[in-house]
Amino acid sequence: MKSRTAAVIGSHTATGRELIKELCSRRMYAEVIVLSESEVTYSHEKMSERIIDFRYFEAGHLGIVDDVFCCMQPSNDPWFDPLMVAAAVKKSNASQYLALSSMGADPRSILRLNRMYGEYELQLKKLKLPSLHIFRPSILLTNPDDFGVKESAAEKIMTFAGWAMVGPLKTYKGIRASQLALAMTEKALNGKFPIAAIYKSGEIENTKRSESET
Image 1 (tube, rainbow, N blue to C red):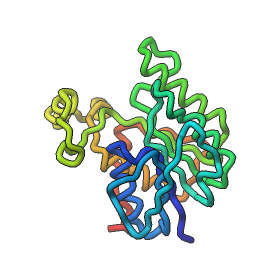
Image 2 (cartoon, rainbow, N blue to C red; image 1 turned 90 degrees about the horizontal axis):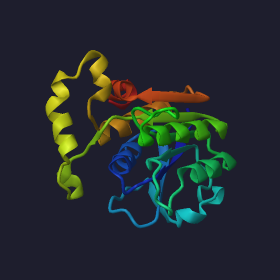
Image 3 (tube, rainbow, N blue to C red; image 1 turned 120 degrees about the vertical axis):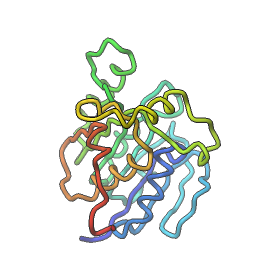
Image 4 (cartoon, helix red, strand yellow; image 1 turned 120 degrees about the horizontal axis):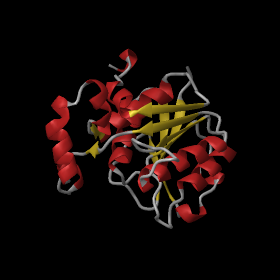
């Protein structure tokens, strides 16, 4: 299989930082392009940076790329519209788009956030991207020392209770950003190219590194 080029959006998020490291470590990726509004602290010989204003994002910012990873979830921030980014990716030559949603996403949910994520997923599917991967993680757990922040109360509870979450409850178990980054990379490299695939938190947690990379 020929080498690939990846583009990462959301480098300042916990998942984005872990994903950049994961992608740079893979033999299949010859180049990792980081699209960001500011410079990142991590550096690697495979990595290149493009500083852009996401309010004016378009396909030309991507250049020649195979896999686009968006680590930004939908929100009310006026400076970033994940659907506009996805629409620009559709106009590029990218073969895969990998996006973050959230556990519980449902356009008919009575909960506002779940409904927002569900509507986001519907709009992504309507774009008819060549291959769409949607990840629905539970609460993301980060290493506070890596980001200079205190662990949230929710993170502490999910970490403590994780041992008890088995079977159907495993879907609600907190998940490390590094594990989510691993799952996103593995799904991009498995050669399946689904029209639209959704991965729930349990499946994300169970994803293992491929034998060729161990």
